[in-house]
Length: 292
Ligand code: SF4
Image 1 (cartoon, helix red, strand yellow):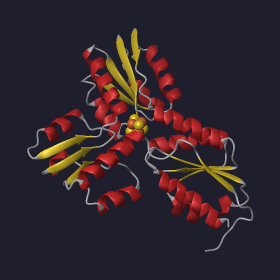
Image 2: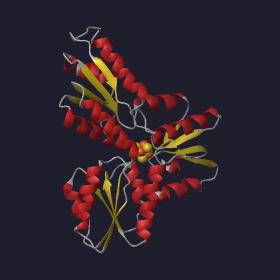
Image 3: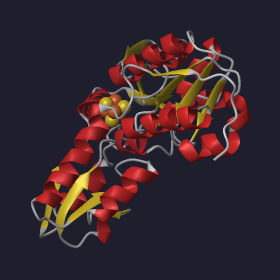
């Protein structure tokens, strides 16, 4: 392996990086059930991380996309939660033991959506329509609800002009987007209720990452290219460190960013909520190898 940099950089990993506790707990529950000899299936991927997916599969933990595909054994509901109808369906399936690993923060969002709908508010959820967490939360929001995209203002026009609006967000969106959206909704109703459903883990992770990014020559954000919280983390880091890159994994660093490493004295690393610490450490170790 040839090395490329004349400077050996100091490499630091952000303080609160690695899996969030919601994802970690779901993985632990699945592994624990499997270790007890159960036939374990997860409803949807527990995490969009190739290494973890392979590890779970090697342990014999299967994944089903739909409740109908599960014929027995133990079913794990992932941290993002599932739509209410789907949850009821699996719970009533004979011979299926359900372990609900829905994150407590997501459960609170689901509860808030239900309570707002019951109190007559049109529920407005800001996030990504195709995100599993949003699909789950909206199922509790009754007939009168809308989902808008935090990255696409044109979708905000879906919010009706009406008496009572209730606002919620996907747990991983930026808090300033929720504030902006709440102000927008205020101009469309008389009675506005905003429930702050931004996950504190997202906030602390962003804060630590931005502090580190401001103190390095180059910042690496590791995580799936489809992961919204990882993309947003990269945007935040880039706002204080122009030399921020977003890579899916250590191999992408080596194949696409060898020149980028050259000449950097201080490099920071962070990752999205579904990027385990071991992936961040692998990136750090590869930087050391490439710059030795
Ligand atoms: S990001 Fe927050 S809300 Fe989402 S699973 Fe992790 S801890 Fe729970």
